[in-house]
Length: 68
Image 1 (tube, one colour):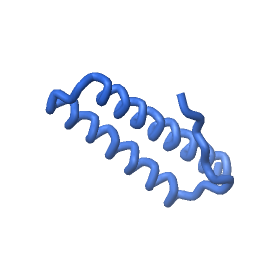
Image 2: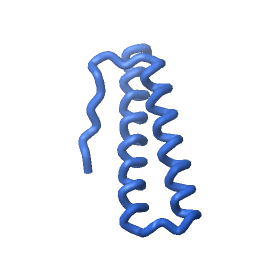
Image 3: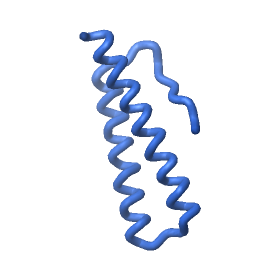
């Protein structure tokens, strides 16, 4: 599993960008699964989605720490 790396300063624009990336990766995975892509391809896409989800979650948490 890859480590999540974020800039020291996280703002709402970065969180929004990461949210869109996460959602795009999920949609891409859904489409690939529906099209019957090979399991190793789906596994790689799922790993990319999970990383995007973790990056979004970490950024959102850091944003709330700075503005909370």
